[in-house]
Length: 453
Image (cartoon, rainbow, N blue to C red; front, side):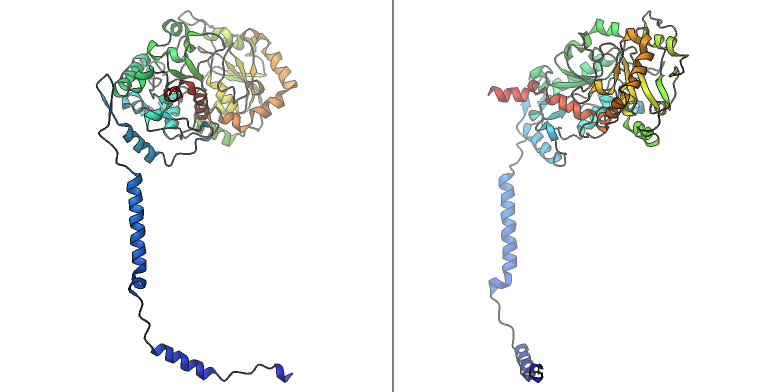
């Protein structure tokens, strides 16, 4: 086995001598270019990038401006494009809206933000006008260049003037405030004048929408303001029959319910939890339905409900306010949503959001976003004349398809579609508003000019 033993070499001394000899020699002289090639390369690349930047970025021609007959000078289009490109870099993807673009007017504060001094302005049932404005400001569809806009949003808060007598929103000033806002934008910009507001969008989130009055007879009498008849209204009022207060291009939207209050309630009572109240209603129910004005409140429907079912143990009916009423809704199987002065009610949104089957008692009421919410599958409609049969109708539903209705109702997408969030979320109420506007792109002045060329 001796021939396989590895023997040490005798060349170690030669290796050491060679290393010492190598160290003793001076290093070879590097060429001038080899010594400074890093600096040459850095300067070359810097010159390349700087020249590319100045070639592709032309200075903004501030001297170019657009003037209308009003003799007012408007900001240049190049300036709008520069601002738009800078501020929209962080905007989220527009999703299914593709190239929809909405310009939001920056109005003097007296038309909107000054009203927010009263915190109720952004939290009451008419506050969709505030919520939509806030959501659009940070939306991916917003453009800062009005020349490329499809629609123009006019943010005027008309529902925040609360009565000192009863605390309800008083909207007697609405028409004059809106007219003043239109006078302002038509004198400062050319976009209203070129289409007479055809591509402009307003929110009318109170009782009778674009008629801007709380009582139906008066709303019908005064009608929609002449200066707004060509515009688009986002309004809570909508019916399935001809009505003067919807005789305008419009989108039916849900009333506003603060998302935070719903999240708080659902944090304590899960939507699929125990429901020990069979039929629930809390709200105004007049024993004598005839108002002091001689009109009948709720077309007598609420009075009829009270008289027929107040003593029925299946019905939990309360006529007085209670701050924690959402905890009653989330424990109920059926929630009554009768008309009041107007046919729509915030109870509809609260019932859906808290998983209580809404029982709609308002003949001809048109519901928001029917393409997104399958209303026949999550709610019940009872004709006003059939209130006397209400108990039997609900008993029949409970014995047949209640579980199917609840399963559809409890889908998170249904609740999301009726919620206005601070920032637009896919599938929420503002998202569906934008989807509805996208379906009206034939009203876009910009697109009509492009297609005609």
